[in-house]
Each structure stands twice: as C-alpha cells, then as structure tokens.
Length: 406
Image (cartoon, rainbow, N blue to C red; front, side):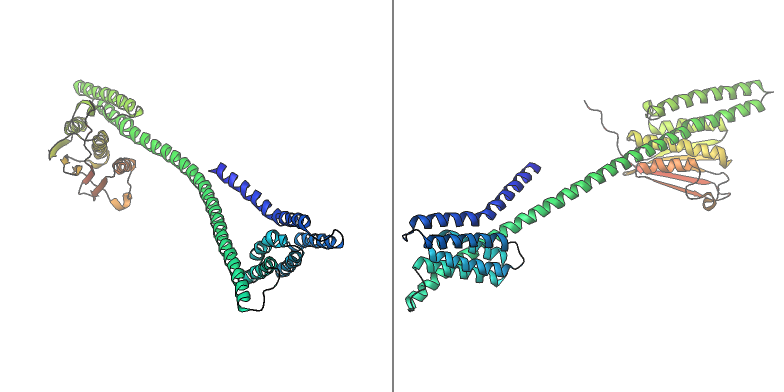
C-alpha cells in the first residue's frame, strides 16, 4: 500500500511538471508551424510574431504566479487573440492554454467568462475573423463557441471531481496511518497492562495458594503441637497430637508443591468433589474436636477442575476460619448441584462477628475466597452477627468437565 501510494505521488508530481511546461511547449509548437507555413516574406512580419511569442512566454512566467489572477487571464486571452491573428496554429494549439488557465486561476462564473473569451478568439481565428452580420453567421459562431465552452466546462468539472476525490483519498490515508500509529501505541500500552495484570494475578494466585496450604497447614501444626505440650502427662494423647502435626506437615508440603506447579488439590485427582469435601471436613473435625456434617443435594456430576478446586479451597478456608475465630460446637457443609450453578454453604454456631466493623472484604482468608469465586464469575455471600454464628455461601457456574479426547 505504501509503495503504491509513493508511486502515485511520483506520477502526480510528474504530471504537475508536465502541466506547468505544457503552455511553453504548445507555444513553441504553434510558433514552429506558423513560421513553416507563413506565406509572408521573412523579415518584419516574423519578427513581430517572435516578439509576441517572447512577450507571451514572459507574461506566463511572471504573471501566472502572482496574486492578480484575473489580470493574468485577461492579458493571456488578449495575447492569444494577437497570436491567433498571426497564424491559426496559435488558436489550434496554444489556445488550449487559455482554457486551462481560465479554469485553473479563476473562480465561479469568471471561469466561464475566461473560457468563453478564449473560445470566441479561437473560433474567430478558425473562421478567418469575426462572423458576418447575418443570422446564420452569428448563430454558427455562437454555436461553435458554446460547444467549446460546454466541452471545456464538462471535462474540467470531471477533472476537478477526480482531483477532489484523490485529495480526499490522501486525507483518508493520512487519517488511517495516524489511526494505525495511535492503535500501535494503544496496543503497546495494552500489552504492558496485560503483562502487569498477569503478574499481579499470578502474585494473588500464589498468595492465595500459600494461604490455603502453608498458612493453614502451619496453623494446624501449631495447634497440634500446643495440644501435645498440654498433654505431656498423657502419653497416648501426646503421641496422637504429634502424629497429627507430622501428617499435616506432609500434606502441607505436598499441597505447596502442587500449588507451585499450578495444579489442583491432590484430593480431586482421584476423588469426586463431594467425597473430597467430606474427607476435608472429617479431618478438620478430628483435629479440632468440633462436629462437622456434610450434605450433598442434587445430581452429582463431574465439574471443570477449576470449579471443583475453587469449591474445595473455599470449604478448607471456611473451616480454617471457624477453627481460628468462631469457637463453634457444630459446623454444617452443604454442597448443592443445581442446573446452572454449584453452591457450597458453610454454617457454624460460633461467636459470629460484626460485618460492618470487619469491613466488606474481611481478612485475607475471606478476600482469598472472594477472588477465587470471582475469577469464575461466581458470587460469595457472608452472613454473620455477634452471637449468631456465621454462614458463607459460594456459588459458581456449573461448567461440566470436558470429555477426554480419544
């Protein structure tokens, strides 16, 4: 496209040079033919012709670039008339300059005035002088003059339309190039923003994974070790707490490795989501000595790995919050499979908290749950008040698991 545009520009500049040189070329051709066909003896007659030619060339060179355009065209038409009286070749060839410059330098009706004056001069030269004062002679003269004026006006108007369209095309190309440059800049900015957003999203993902694995695991380990310290006089209980701490450490290490590798929780690799939630609740219940009940409603079906991972992580985080803050005696988890969504509800009978004082986002655990659920275009709702327990409801789209390709 750029190459074609440059080629057209070169052609246009070359055409402009040709148009600028055309009056002189036509004047030279007219002079040569006039001198070759002149029947007058060489001498003063040819000197006058050459003098008018030189004056005409100087007039075009000096006056065509000035601001007095009407004066220039008037002088040009008079010179064409004078030259045409010296030979019809000037009317045949150089007279074209009068049409061209009248249309180019004048505006409005003055264009037609200049073209009409040039046509009147050239037609008179063709017919050997002014028409006879008869109706036929006058009508013939006016007819040919009118035909020339109409033809010049038509072709000049078509040329103007073509030129205007060419100019408009150039302006459109310039605007398009400017828009492309702006789009290139915007694209670069979007790439930078996307890269920054990707980095931020990955940081949030890692922060959530660390919180869901290492932080929860370490909290459980500390709880079990503290319980083992308090049970120093009860050897079986102490051993049981230490064993739980070791198991939590191993599970936390395995989950941390999986998080780094950006894979889902290990339980979901071989266990359906309802069973994985039940296992998490049972282990949590054993570690914290709090009763946890799990119920499943609806038709259980395999969901997309991210859907199942989000719900399982939400269950783990909700239970961790109950252990750390609620002081509850019973927890209920309900996993509901509906037509369009899968929902997880976690309710406890603990101390509860004031949602207004805690802020809309809550602690990092609640923030992590919100981000996980929002990433899947889901919703997370929290209901709580002091002394009335807490209810957390996570709802995500029921995106089915893709069938394995054969």
